[in-house]
Amino acid sequence: MKRIIALVTLAVLLLNTRTFAQAELCQGAYFTEEQGAAFLEGRVPASRAEWEKRAAQIRANMLEGMDLLPLPPKPGSPPIIHSRREMNGYTVENVAFESMPGIFVTGNLYRPTQKLTSYAAVLCPHGHGTDPRFTDPAQIRSAMMARMGAIVLTVDMIGYGDSKQSEHKIPKALKLQTINGMRALDYLLSLPGVDPERVGVTGESGGGTQTFILAALDERVKVSVPCVMVSAHFFGGCVCESGMPIHKKGDFQTNNVEIAALAAPRPMLLISDGGDWTANVPNVEFPHIQKIYALYDQKNKVENAHFADEKHDYGPSKRKAMYPFMARYLKLDLGQITDASGAIDENLVKVLPRADLEVFTAAHPRPDRAIVGGEAVMGLLK
Image (spheres, one colour):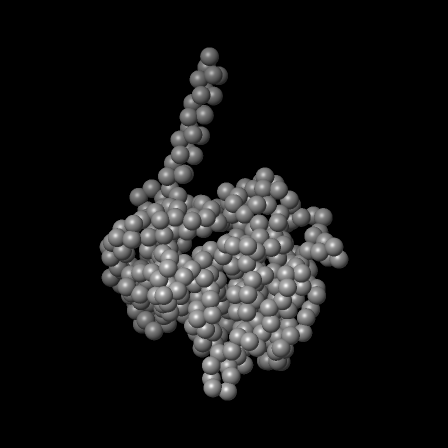
């Protein structure tokens, strides 16, 4: 009887723990628009010291909520790189590297053909969709920045493209994608000639979430451009954004605006539009982040490009707002992507078929040591 009572008590405790953990998740439209605005209005820091104290608390909660303490050791295996293609002012290669033993980050590496004394580096995560690494927006922005003089790495979300070791929506997707992002920065910074003071990140939607999370947690990110994602009321609709308790713990609460503001005073461009949860950015989210940058006397280093008549994407006008910002702060050559009139010309780059960009093929199979299956991957993350 005592054993039965003990087992029942344990089951109740586990159930309560799980329920409490779920209660700390802030997913999707967790706030109304009015609640999101009011939350920020009540949290305008009066001083830099006050903000930095709160910033430390936000970061600590993120690291704990993502179970990132400590970070897993970095694998020492060499990267996989093949199928180099010479394009118009840039090259493209197919790459993979381990972020954890048996976990491969897959993507494409774009390099400028012009020889420079040093190179900026840009990481391009993507959002949800049909294998977005192979789509026009991902290829075009990567190639254009390579023409400007940056070494650019675009990577798959887990479960997308060549990253098929587990489904996307595993419970600890947020943890794994953050580790993958940090290891992607490791890889970029290991490349000859990369200037560690000129490192940028930009992505749209779920890739925008990856962008501001990396900028918040990793000081190696010097410039960030989160596209169509920073919102006072919307916390991310996928487990890879809000499936772990990074926004709330007990009485502590934050939102994605405060997380994005952790980049201060490093340059950041918020790209927003009128067709999604970033519709209020010019009047709500952007002014709040400006106030935090002003505490560092760097108010001009955060900007907003808003497209009221556009929708949730990383379309041409949004990319054309990003290029000059990256050029200014990463010391890139905007002249390499403009025509005689000074207009940005994306016809300078060519979109390749998916088959040309795939990392794991019959000729280049995924290594046998790769861990496969959601349960096995989750076991590694625990």
